[in-house]
Length: 74
Image 1 (cartoon, helix red, strand yellow):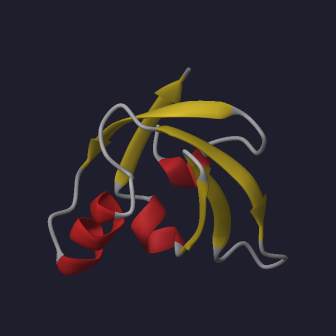
Image 2: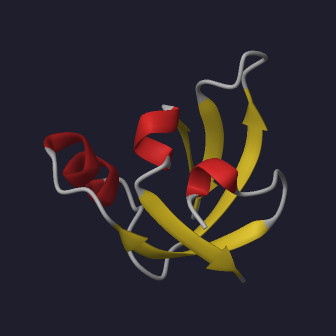
Image 3: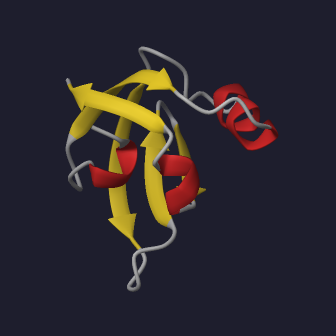
């Protein structure tokens, strides 16, 4: 499943980053790499962006970026 469809407040593990554009490389630099623990904290009222915790950091991701990150339950 993609990070876009991940349930809120549930620990997930990143299994793959499918995109290879500049934005995805920046996300990998910030910790969204294969094997990283990620939790969706909340979503904006209209659904975009989403607020996630990766390790000890918190990020806001656009839905387009979250869709290219595959996750699985912890």
